[in-house]
Image 1 (cartoon, helix red, strand yellow):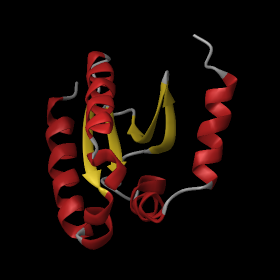
Image 2 (cartoon, rainbow, N blue to C red; image 1 turned 135 degrees about the vertical axis):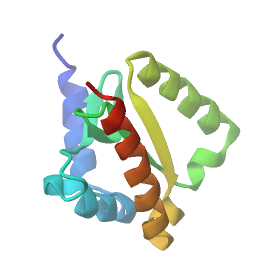
Image 3 (cartoon, rainbow, N blue to C red; image 1 turned 30 degrees about the vertical axis):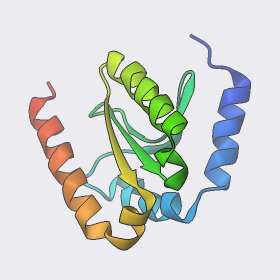
Image 4 (tube, rainbow, N blue to C red; image 1 turned 180 degrees about the vertical axis):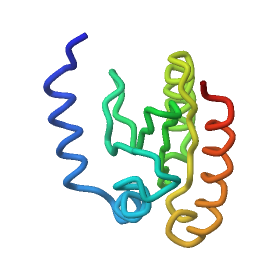
Length: 122
């Protein structure tokens, strides 16, 4: 299935305009720095663009700012998560302020989740 070129271009733009939180997380995940896993950032899983994706584990990481706390955003995020889970992907979400201010806690949680997924993957 050919991906929408506009979606790919938008993902590329998002990569070059990363938020501080996305930049920090990318520095921790890139180049197999985290558990020797390969992550992609602003990865297209049509019709969505996910913040971070690990193909090996089927893991999507989403970083959420305060705008994700509104009723509409909560509903949209839930719908998006259901769509991704229907593709047999696991979705984990972290609040931006936790990534920036409690990085160790976020990484411990991510380590635990990745370890569990590694044990259950073929």
